[in-house]
Image (cartoon, rainbow, N blue to C red; front, side):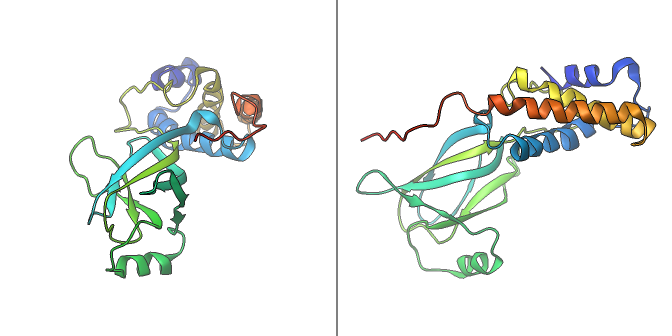
Length: 223
């Protein structure tokens, strides 16, 4: 479905207050909360994962990430001898490690990374970039798995959500937006809000069966 279709389904009979920002609330409150609730209730779902690669060259240590980047799951770099090395360490939550990395002037292979705002100002603007913990001393290829977000360029442009959220997983969004409309219009003590809150929670729980598309019973390695 598109954002406009879901907004129309949620705002039945135009019940939203005239000054309630349906579009902004849906894009920047309801959808992020839905994705966070799926993580907490269902776990890391297959339909949010995507793969990517980065060609690292000396002496550049910062690279823009995909427009739909949400969060890293794993980053590894290729070895000169073939195959992949151990996973790179995420150091973004340790300010001392980040400061040490920024102060490092000795070139070397990438071992750690963190995420920063992109310095790119050429439309379409990519919001995030990855920065590596030391100045690269040569050419490397980084392979990574990330969880996708949904890039919105503004509050009003209609966006097709199907590439980011499977169609049959989108219906909790209708309840999620409608409960915010009811919260604003009627208040949290109203039965209509309580009913939509419950419907939203049940719809999120119903996605547990859609977590993975195959059984996770064995490890298979390519040689």
